[in-house]
Image (tube, rainbow, N blue to C red; front, side, top):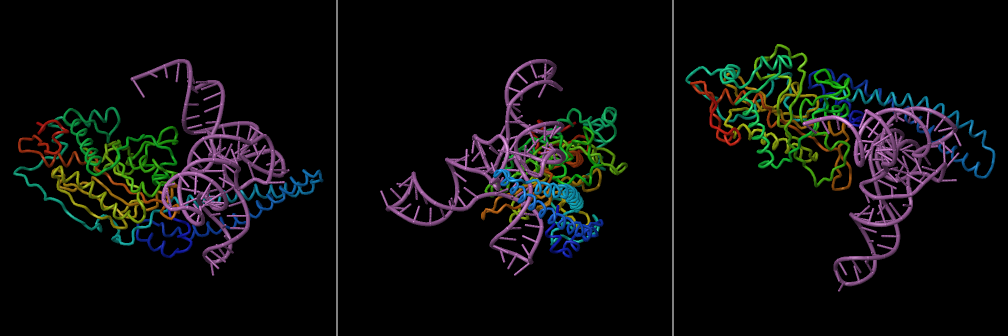
Length: 423
RNA sequence: GGAGAGGUGGCUGAGUGGUCGAAAGCAACGCUUUGCUAAAGCGUCAUACCUCAAAAGGGUAUCGGGGGUUCGAAUCCCCCCCUCUCCGCCA
């Protein structure tokens, strides 16, 4: 959520920054400003009436104490009360209208973001490793999975529908090994605190991180839309400290969580539907940071580096791209995507998206810290996958496939997997 | 799921219709005193919003959340959320 004062004071700046995104957010500014003017006008009038009522009610109390008649005053205040009730309603409506407008507005992109329209405009930031070469035509993970019985899409579809996975045997063990490998790396080497949060999320927390109100159709809802399945651990973990005032010394907070992620992927039907690449439920280890505004950009670099470390230790070739303004997510001010090479796809797969949300989410969830001068300010929230499992699984089995159809397990993962190959 | 108890400022805790944004204590911060420490004394010590060019100042709201009764609600009534205890069920 953007600061209404910023919109009020620098509407041109806000419009200009928003216009670099896709969508029509920048066209909403005038409507918001009009709403804000009306809201403040109502509020000022309401406050004046409240002040009158308060003052006169005290007078009534004083008169009664002295046994003086007060009927006339009481009638007058009753009249004011009726006006207040009416005005109260109007003001509440104006408040809500303004909040709804603000909740629909995406974050301002960072001033130094590359300007662009879509994924084609995302600059490559760095590349690690090189594409592996094979003396044979590398198979894709679907073929490898079928041959080695790593997962069973048909039976998963039978119980849950298309777009769900059921890992089996060595595949299930590999999935579990990857989760544990990531958690151990971030907790032991990168000093993140592990949390294991609930996956069922209430509306206000979904609003807090920005999934609601705009993206409800992408979420799995339960209990008639009262609660939702978490689409990412970002939601429960970032909301952990919602409505709190943290001490500056506690920051930055580094949190890591493994959770399954549930996504309806509405509108994605038919796209990347083969295999494990786009599914309704997948495992992910997520990194979340709460930082001061002074350090958040630096923390984003570190967080991205922490996620990259997963791929480095597994020996997987990847590249980091920076999202241009047109391709960035709703709440993000700056995003790096990490894309791992998948030989069987002959393509890079997004396994992590590392973003600084600045105070966008903190404002929605009222998450603050007390700075060294004792002032309460909104924290900056960051998150990034560290990393998303099924695609990491895909890259790993496709990269380490051998001519005989077996799969080698990289050394760093062997203690977790329990053996050196799958055959 | 059933029955009961409760939710007040950073914490403890008083307050059952008026002058209460809220006593008192603790913690914190500042000043004074002091050889240091300790202690004592004095003071400060919630948040959001509105008004104002800004500051100063003024104002409104907030005692879990929402609604109601009333001239007036922390206090009375209703709904919801949360916590605790007991019962039932259960991995």
